[in-house]
Image 1 (cartoon, chains in turn brown, cyan):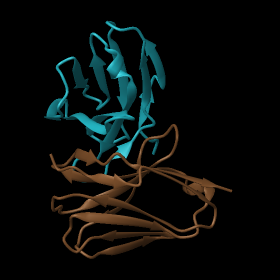
Image 2 (image 1 turned 90 degrees about the vertical axis):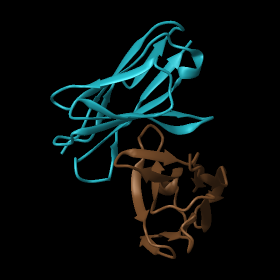
Image 3 (image 1 turned 90 degrees about the horizontal axis):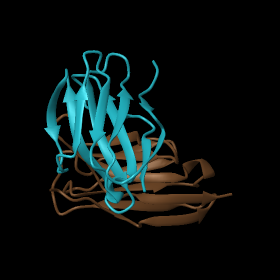
Image 4 (image 1 turned 180 degrees about the vertical axis):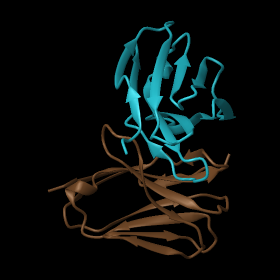
Length: 110
Length: 112
């Protein structure tokens, strides 16, 4: 099993602050995905990173895939309360089997 | 299109009972996967159904089973419930030739 370790487990910040969360593994992946799960909802796919060193931006969210394709990070600029949620990284094996990290719970206070 | 729907949203059962959860995928999606989410273990893959056939299975005991109907709706069943089965059960659907999965809101199962 290719494990994904996410850090930190929990992050509580004020609106307007910047933050970075991490997803690390000892395994090499062909791609990694990031999801956000809001309370009472299922995870929603934010991005898939495929190429080592790749950087993708989604508004205030910046995703990076490590050069060796073993790790990824998510940076949020000027966090807003609407960013509150559980951020999960996952890798896909086969068509439908997703293996998830345990996630980073982000709380952004006004 | 309507999203993935799951029923019921909340369920309370007693140890030893069995439970059936239902998932209706997005129209046109033939693949349905089930996941269990707990605070301790996170999100774990249970199984995937495609065109009424189980294609993949995670590392769960045989008490966990599922099926898919000809209209792609899926059910999962847990027999002889244990306290540790308390979890959020999520289903996700996808189109046959695409990777992206769309998750439903989940069914929160509490076993007492």
